[in-house]
Length: 399
Ligand code: CMC
Image (cartoon, rainbow, N blue to C red; front, side):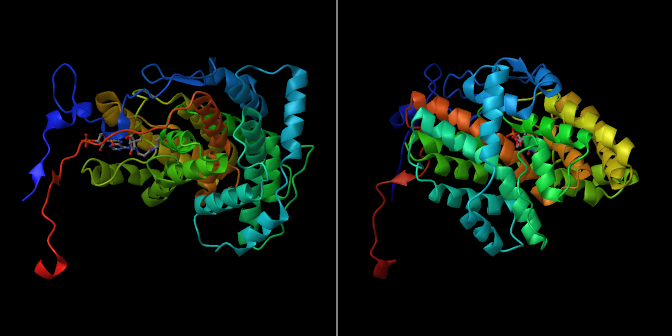
């Protein structure tokens, strides 16, 4: 017979005042470090990157400028921005070995699995991959955020048996991505929406994927391992994959008339969660959802068809969520509820939406890696041991 360990023998798990075991399941409200990158005010629907509100950035900034802001902590001068955008443009092309790898990867895997493999391989080919100096990480960051849209667009075209479209250095990051996807320059309104979506997805404090990146970096591992780990964390439906699942949920509902029945059958009974609703930090409406929602509404009117049907289903479902879940339980719709409809209007297939999210979020992951390792301490939490110790080992023939 073994022996249970008492709470007193595990004082690191006890509240100093009450003496009771405290378990922070999901690490809710645990502050692991100081930061100057991002502030989320989840009670007042506010989000700031380096102190600038997401509304101001979406309206007035560009993705390139926001990347500079997040990475360097200040808005660039015109000259700094030109140099920086030029650097990003120069880095867009991907090595031939990665293109060959994309051609070999099974066509039916999830785009996030493809991205994980391709980013890892890109790291293998980078001679400076182990350089964790500030300059080294910045260089790898620019390299990666510039190349990720190329990887996604090439993969999309390769799996559809189409010729890849080489990046066009005359186009900005968002325009170029849509150009490489579709082989023609996008309408301005779609390019602007893509640019804004990259801004909205670029950073979001210490979420599960950023935490994964920082945990890996805190062991003084390498940059690419940190990002590959973060891609793995983002791929889960509770996190970034929610934008894919939200669209699948709209497909399952099928038409605006079916929303009521579907909601009663699956949400009121607790059989399913609304995908694209709820958040650990936002207890009111996600400010990014508001911006995505406006684009979705505009595109529904402009393009009609399936875009409009998706919008109508989402609009009706959101009505239920806001009335029944948000008002009473603070479970409100989030950015992933609406972003998919915006991407759908751009002609991007649904299964790619989380990969597009990852391409933008690499900025935030990288900023957190840099910030954390600058004053590094290995991340190492504890568990409360609820099993037995001192159990008698019985030889296999006597069991
Ligand atoms: N629909 C219905 N009920 C929900 C939902 C939802 N979307 N989200 C949470 N709940 C309920 C949940 O069932 C639980 O109820 P009970 O207390 O009765 O068991 C309660 O709310 C608390 O849920 P939780 O899982 O403990 O909350 P959390 O803070 O740990 O999880 C979340 C946050 C985002 C994982 C969760 O809200 C969720 O699963 N949402 C759906 C997936 C989603 O949209 N994810 C995207 C998040 S935002 C962007 C991103 O990170 O990518």
